[in-house]
Length: 170
Image (cartoon, rainbow, N blue to C red; front, side, top):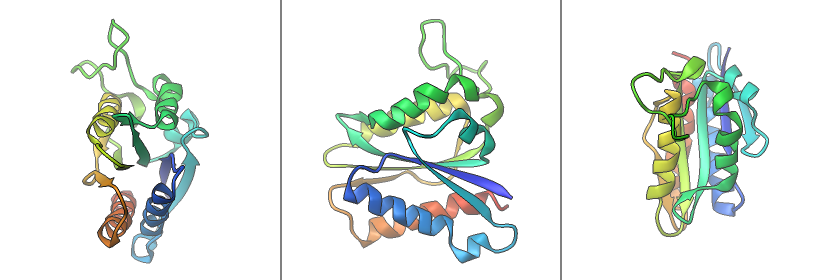
C-alpha cells in the first residue's frame, strides 16, 4: 500500500479547515478503492526524515509569514533535508544544479497549500526551492488562499488531497 505523508503547520482556524479538507480528499472513497493509500499526518515540528523516506508522496501545508513559509515547516526541512537526499552547494545554499539527483525521494509527487493575509509569493517560492532541490515533482496546482476561506478554497483543498493520493494508486 502506498503511503502519503501530510506535513503541516496549522495554527489558525483557516489552516485547520484547509487541513481537514485535504484529509477528507485523501480519504475519498474513490481514491481509497482497491489497494488504497495509507495517510500519515504529522505536524511540521514532529515530522522526521524517517517519515519522509517511508512515504511515496507528500502534501505540505503552511502559513505565509512575513513573505516566507512558517518557521515550523522550515524547521521540518532544516531537520530532514540532508538525511532525505538534499544537497547544498559550496556556499551552503540549496543545490538545484544538474548534478543534484535529489536522492532517494526524487521523483515523488507533492502538493502544497498555503494561507496568508497579504502575499503568498515568497512562501510559495521558498517551499518550491527546497522541494526542487529534493527532486520532488509537483503533482497538482499549488493552492494559495489569501484572506477568508470560501467554498471554492475548501473544494480546492479537497481536490488537492484527493489528487495527490490518487497519484499514488496509479
